[in-house]
Image 1 (cartoon, rainbow, N blue to C red):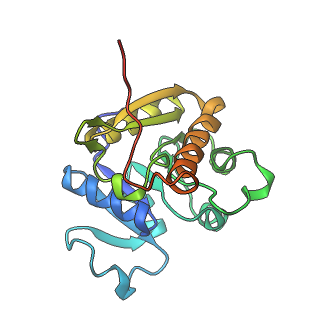
Image 2 (tube, rainbow, N blue to C red):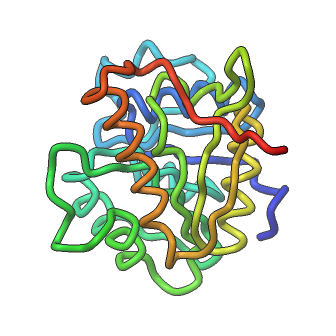
Length: 208
């Protein structure tokens, strides 16, 4: 699979992050499915009727790209019961907030990467700004900066989706710098809550 042909995206999880990404991608014209454990649960009835809510396995099987948008403590369970075929692209949008890193890994991204089979593209993205901004990265005075890191084709795919959502997506490098993306998320969280900035802000790139 080459970038530009990914017309179908699975978003695993229907919390604030998952819903924002689903809504934004759907508005942008992508075929998007929501993968959850209990798709018949009434709490998903408020999603757009054109968005299919299915099991996690069904969402992944029908899609080219999967975005992980589940709580950090649920990642192990989700990944242990989900199979990704070679060529599939996995985008990790998760953060360890107020919880320990899984299994002693240095980052969530490292943990997720360790659970993926050979040939599966992996990238860290969509975790560095408040959920309410993920469906539209355009602010009144510019586009929000969105750092991305991972495998080259996966980075290309995530950049395409992020740009479609209005972000200024910037590739930092490969899997070895995934920790930098998570550090950026920790900075946003620190400023939003400990420094009192609130949630309605993002970083922008300024060049001279």
